[in-house]
Amino acid sequence: MTFPSAARDLALFLARVAVGAVFLAHGWQKLFTNGIDGTAAFFDQAGVPAATASAWFAAVVELAGGAALIAGIAVPAAGLLLLVDMIGAFAFVHAGSGLFVDAGGYELVLVLGAAALALAAVGGGRFSVDHLLTGRPRAARHVNG
Image (cartoon, rainbow, N blue to C red; front, side):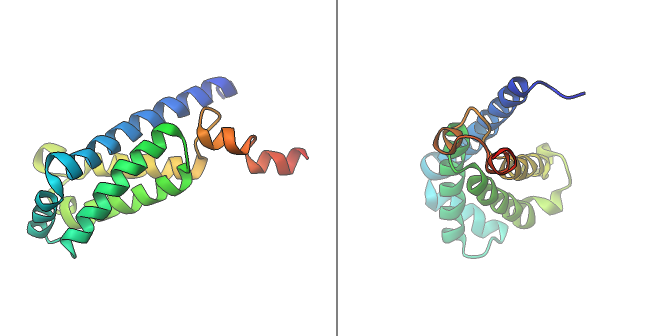
């Protein structure tokens, strides 16, 4: 069964906004709620290398990447940067704590990383700034003329 293209575009838009909102909130938390110093202190305690630089990377990528997903701008690049961020979160913070988030596990990181990868692969869809700037997807232009 295949959904009509309008339904697929709407589903992609809703998923992109939901995932973007979660990333944006986590970036905001790292930058403004906990602050870079607080985030870096946590990263240092967790054994993240270059804790201050890593805190800046995570905060900026999550905040800007989340906003980019919501707007649908540079979605493939934002998705890949967010995936790298989640790989770091998995490797340095959550991998040793099992799956479940209530025990510090990686379930949220896993889902967010998978969503970021999927969005990087499929792009922002019809309801995105990317689509407004480029029109039809490149593959469709090539096949159809």
